[in-house]
Length: 271
Image (tube, rainbow, N blue to C red; front, side):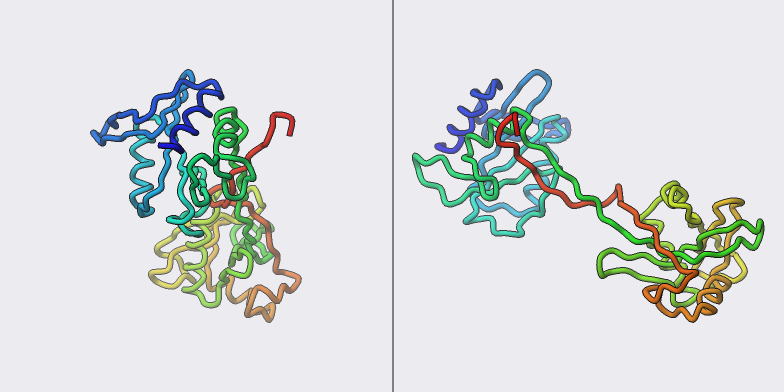
């Protein structure tokens, strides 16, 4: 009750209309009760004080219930109950940690250096923002010519991120690697990097049966069989893409699908 009072007073100070213990129901029929419900025009935010433990699955379910009700929600949890690593930083679920609670003391938020009251005022005054850090991939390719149109192409055959990655080692394996790359990067994004796209051809000479993914010429759309590309890589004396001979290249790609990030709090409007 003490923490709810701090949060409610801070929200009022930020200019929002506040109701504590506000009940609602989602379009799917799920009940919810917000510790502190803040309304400002069309914006509605539930601020939850979570001192008792709940599983990540329970947290996500409650967040989805709020979202389906057009209510955004942020969580303030007790660090004694929710250990480090409980939940990765997420734009979808704003989750912040409080130290041990002392009655009469406005607690400092872990990692932000401001009190809970100050943080709530800043959050509701648009001084809290999500800073995204896209994952940076390397997409590895062979400089080559299309067998059909003769155009210069870059035959994709591997990927990496930090110390992780994979590259084609056999004809069947090339299809598997290309399928993974197609999950990482779209056809339009491959083309923007000047690389061949990736297609699925169930019956293509030079591809292993049951392994249908292969390069598709960026110029004419002709499928490039994997046996041919593996042979060209072998002619370079290339067993691992890390050796990087002259006909092997790598393009850097910032993924729009995958990212990490963090919440950034600005102490004042002038910062």
